[in-house]
Image (cartoon, rainbow, N blue to C red):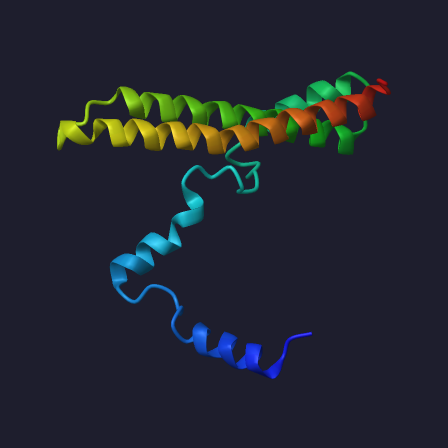
Length: 138
C-alpha cells in the first residue's frame, strides 16, 4: 500500500518528467519504437506472400486459421531476416561525415543485431509451436 508521503513524492517527481519539450525531441520520441517495424501488424495488401503461403498450407490440408497463422509466422521470420541484413549493410556503408565515429556506429549496429535476436528467437519459437500443433508433432 502506498503511503501518503510516497504518493506526494511520486506526484512531485512526475511534474519533472513530462516528456520532450523541443520539437526535435518530440520528433525523436515519436519514432523511438519504429526503428525496425517488427512490432507492426501485417498489411495483407503490402504482404501478398501471406496469402500465397496460406494457400499452400491449406492445400496441404490445414484449416484456414492455422494456415494463416503459419503464413504470418513465416513472413515474420522473413521480416527479421531483412532487418538483420539491412543492419549489416548499414555497417558496410562508408561513414563519410566523420570516419572517427565509425567504431561507434559499428557498436550501435551490433547492439541492433542483439535486439533483433529477441525477435528472431520469438519467430522461431512461434513457428515451432505452430508446426507442432498443425501437424501433431510431439
